[in-house]
Length: 374
Ligand code: FSX
Ligand code: SF4
Ligand code: F3S
Image 1: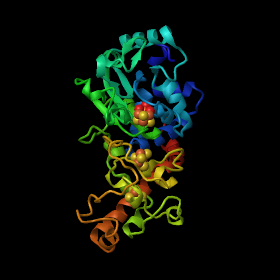
Image 2 (image 1 turned 45 degrees about the vertical axis):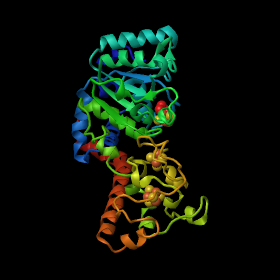
Image 3 (image 1 turned 90 degrees about the vertical axis):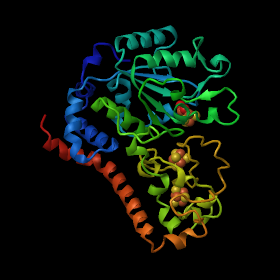
């Protein structure tokens, strides 16, 4: 945990103090610029902000959840992210990761909230059960409702990490026995950013925290309160199996040769055409894979009510954006040679280009190092 004195340092100072070089810092800033969805020409501005901005305190609450979101977050593939979460963003309280426990942890949280009232970021994982006075999730004898209201009171903004805190998630699925609700049904007077996914992608969570920490403002959000740069496209739009969808080539069974050869998983229930997330662009585990690439159809884990939208292994009746009559049987004929085909090819190409840009960011960081003077 950070001390109060450490909080006065800038991001740059704390990174250098951890033993990293300026070159590491520039590479990190370049990498984060790409992850924040900004143009590479913005690197200088990000470097400047990280050199001058004081670190931002973060309080991180856990309610009704599986903790998969934290698991995802700590597996971000950049080595500096571990230091980022433990020091750079000044994580003052997270009962999953912090060394302190019991009364010590609680005191640290209360002290940080008091000292940073009005200025800290509140991260919330998990839904909030409301039935029977909220007794189904209690921490140190206090319900999640009470804890959330207290933590939210002094927050500058709230990030809901994961589909549970953003939408209600699995806990809120029918018949919702504990009356679970998302954060925005309890807190009405704070800016709330939804970062859904069960769990969300580590780099997406990092990118959102860093955007706020670097610029002191929220990233551009869509009408559902999600950052546009990560949730602006459907999984379908960045799917590497998309050319086979367009050609009408569908795998008919799991683990078939066709599924292994990259045929589209639409007939196996894929929800990619109705799911907004960055899986196809960013991937998981250093971009190695994501569900569809591993042969498993998207179950739409970042969408509202995704669990109740099952059965997962039956195909969608219609494919949005392809005309109401479009089905897996007709889509190949519709797409090939049509204007939409060209748009789709462009969309997929754009996503591959974006992924390449992110992966090349560290390399270009070395170039930036030469251009950006200390
Ligand atoms: Fe929910 Fe996150 Fe799914 Fe799990 O904390 S979004 S159940 S991955 O862990 O809240
Ligand atoms: Fe990919 Fe699923 Fe779309 Fe097929 S339906 S292209 S597997 S996202
Ligand atoms: Fe979730 Fe679908 Fe991505 S299931 S992890 S949104 S591919």
